[in-house]
Length: 104
Image (cartoon, rainbow, N blue to C red; front, side, top):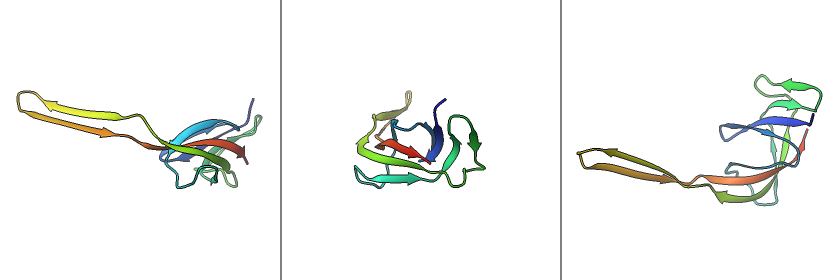
């Protein structure tokens, strides 16, 4: 088995492995900068699994910021028939693309 960690950021949980690239909620960091995430909920070294209550003590995941982007547009549309009521609302989430440098 390979090493992995479950970390929490932006109200979501992500299962990450070393070298993986993924998108998370916008972080306040420049491209090329390293960010340490201390909210590690579970940590596996390939043989042993440590589960935190709520976080594993002393564990951290080092992420490297690749860049920033905006997510896909989500359109919310409401309508009430025969009443002349329509409401259209769009949203694009700000995202940060990161890659995992190391899991400690």
